[in-house]
Length: 280
Ligand code: C2E
Ligand code: MG
Ligand code: MG
Ligand code: MG
Image (cartoon, rainbow, N blue to C red; front, side):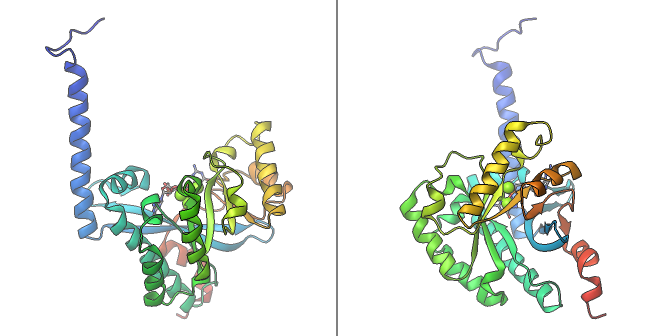
């Protein structure tokens, strides 16, 4: 059935747009309140060395503890935070909280492992990024070697700018990992230009790896390339034993995925990993 058009010819269409816009504006207002009221929490996903099942790091992943809608994943608000500039404030909070929490865990006798923090493109290009990260490290007392920043290929389009920023960050002792590796369009020559410590193989190559020979070949190639370039490599999104077996057969030394653990609240991290080490 062909719908009758409104008087401007876009009746139905524009009503949808209005609703969408309204939802977005509402989200924006709520997000602003959420920042004021501190409604964010960090979850931590363990990164595991499969050969001995030891935790070798954790990725901090932000959640919005919404007063009525429950725990909202970053997919529902990060892009709005980016579009509205709220990402600066949110991102700073994330960095500070991740560093504070990791230092607290180190002090409590937890394993001396780094925390990885995702950076948005805007944050990465913020002029005072290096200065405020140094300040956060100072204030929280986290040794820079225990902070890892996750950036994506797309952020390094302007090679000369990126080189300066990355060199400053690594000079502080901070580690850099390239998130969602293989998903972007960047040239591999970046890998020799930039001081990067680790590649994180994008989850999209993993999800079907047991059936898809192309994915398997790509993953094997990334791991081999990383080895030749002296880069660490971690596979993201491992959910099954079969996937893990393929990664291990290809000598992938680090794994992050639901197979080992979902992202956990700080309390659950402590219960699952640190209990024996804590002074009661
Ligand atoms: P990401 O950095 O690639 O983080 C990994 C995402 O994959 C997380 O989703 C994690 O829960 C999910 N994941 C891990 N293992 C598995 C698995 O085995 N199976 C499946 N299906 N998923 C898995 P999450 O927490 O929803 O975060 C989504 C994205 O939001 C992140 O992707 C990251 O790009 C962004 N993000 C999260 N926290 C922050 C933050 O503090 N700042 C910024 N700028 N971005 C963030
Ligand atoms: Mg990440
Ligand atoms: Mg990311
Ligand atoms: Mg990723």
